Length: 452
Length: 89
Image (cartoon, rainbow over all chains, first blue to last red; front, side, top):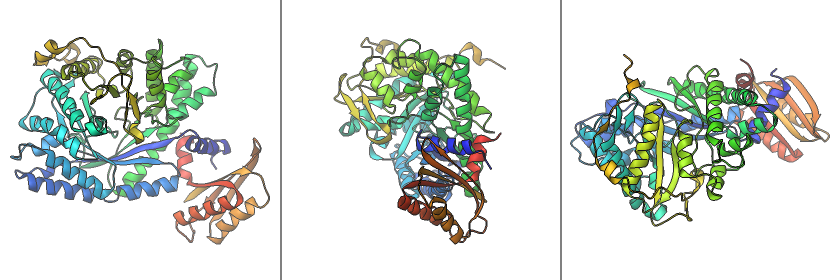
């Protein structure tokens, strides 16, 4: 029999420390749904998703009951739609977003990702149409998520895309102005996007992936924080060990859930992404882990070092626990979704510039940050360019999920509700970046991309 | 297939009786029991075998939750796999 204390530890993690499986995300290839007729293509997309994912929610709930561990989200990611819709003669891809939304509703998942384009080096016709369709697509659907990969360590940064995405974010903010520009919360601009990420809003099913796979995202900031709380006098080396052990256990739970669901759905298990993904609930915050290490508030000096150590230890603990660790695997720092981050912003400890520094050592980027609604599109593009540069030069993924909240300014706050939380509006640099952004073209690939 | 039943709450008479009655009625065999008092709380862990169980797992879980409410304890039943995965290499 498993040891008495081990059983109690697991029960405590689930009941008191909010250990959960954050998402099981089924990746579905839509490459065989390409058709010169948009209408026929969409019908195939709907049929394929509803066929393959028919039992996703049911099996997820069954395993949740059997193992007694919550599986918070059941989701779907698909092949980037620009690749699928590109061969049709359609001049607008909003209808593709609507069919994804309808398929998601039919199978009962709460998000479907993949209204996406991959343009680190240049655009195809389909990429351009897709990017132009993003604002309306996000404004007219409920559960569709979108992302654009506009830079990579291998190819450099597509600055024309960076410029256009700044405008797309502003248009999306305007079209969803009645709900604090919430459409922008469903869009990520990436550099070095990963093709097997199960987390929204940036999930898509990469073209190198199998026909269908089951990816899992595990979370548990509360477990890590509580483990550190029990060892107040630990040195850095000891803290790293404590985090690794907690990450190992969490990952093992995720691996079990992933392989079991995959087996029951008769699809291959893809990857396990162990990311400390916070929620607005108390006890589920990444910022509070950093504070537990001895920082008065997240955002003060030392925060970047603390986050770097946390991120690295999480990866090390997770990597031994599963045969296929992928996605981001690290710590997320979405401001509006983290109760500790929100407080740190509200008390002035955490600024936009510090957040940017933190993104150079964590697994994602500037995430769920609300900024003034009158921020120029070129400033948003410049923020994306900075983040993309951090990712491209450091061989890591960086994402930008910014919400320029229409009609609101610093001192106010945006209310998104649910897991998306609420976000105090953060000040951005008011100096102009437009001449820089309007140059257009491409930032060449960095020297370390030449490895052949 | 085996599962772990965890019973936690304020100590009182009849806890083992109430839980094992439901298990016996549904043909669930108890293979191991450990119990202790931790921080004034009665804590019991049972390892049970579900191979010959006469009802659905979900129904058994609901039955246990019902009795948990009646006797004012927390009762969970979870597949053994979760604990093995998390605590053994």
